[in-house]
Image: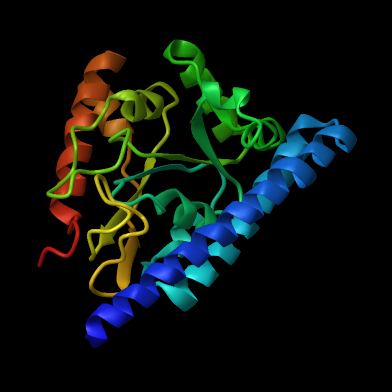
Length: 258
């Protein structure tokens, strides 16, 4: 009976957190970012300011969640405090990107181009200068420009959230970006101890226990050895993708496995 009551309270708290998130994003989407577009014409300065605003809003949201519905531990975050990082992470939960942006002041990410048609996301994408997923060489070039500006580019190589029993097959796009821009990779291993906010889960279905997350920023994965062994970029990207799959598989505990 007590356990059922505690779970119901966590469900209400989860709803409260998502309401806070939604209201905050509405304020940014229809007030803050349109004003930035109107009064700040310099795209680089505007992008930096918008990314910083998003970073601060995610920090506030993570604080609200940590006070109400979850615990988290983050190790070696100082490794993220550098410009121009290519950050790759596994993707067990819906809120992984929220945490990562809260850790990184100038975070960039790849978004669906169709989100420009959505009034709730259009001005955030335009003001922040976030990368649109156009595919092909143009996407690789856009990622290179973002890194050159000192942004930290966050990519989930799985492309979508992990399966409950482990990582999905990694897509080769992240490795292509690393290889073709000759950028070392800063890996972030995410461990979620409760199967909630993951693939096939419902955000309103509170878990039996308080959610718990671990974030571990690893040492940089050097790109040069892959380029030396494989002269052609596609071969190097294939080898790097396989290495990343083994790297995250060995280090990931998905949804509470021992």
